[in-house]
Length: 260
Image (cartoon, rainbow, N blue to C red; front, side):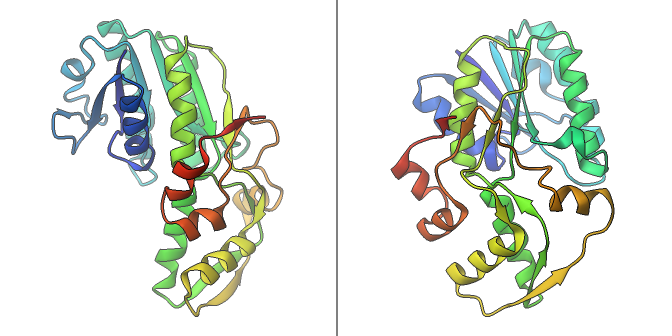
């Protein structure tokens, strides 16, 4: 199949490109920095040419900043219209476990994006994932510059992006489901435990700073809203194993996510 990946140069997109290519598919990487198919979802520039002849589009694009809605909602509208014109038969949208239970900020934008896809003109599957190991590590790495690690109370279920990519590749190879299957990490872990793990594995002598997160976001973290026991597939590599093995090495050794 010819499969286009919007956001193909991002954390998930890079793994997904490699996975689908290894399965023999023709993959087109779409992003503002792609060497061949440069696409800007915020304006629609490049979409017509990039999607010509494609069978499937996986939208792994992301923007958590001020332009989140312009890229993820307005951009999705442009992307779906271009897919319809190009005759794309399956739109796979990447989303987040629990986003519809947390109507604030970025999560509201992701829910709006989901609704747009579900009501759109192209047959679809929406894959919800828990947070990537890469994201957790990036947050801790950034905080370490201030010689402390924020340690709020909360629960996450992180998963390796490479494992998510293997699951999503399988979804892209199948007919559209018009469902929201999920993929999650192997274990639910407290944020404070994740911080201690990162500190231990990286050997950084940093103090843990207890932080209270108010409002809906804080309650969602404390009650496990962003975790799930209902995911269709579960990753096998824990956050600690991922850190110890180096980015992606443990995934290659142990294989992809297993069905629940």
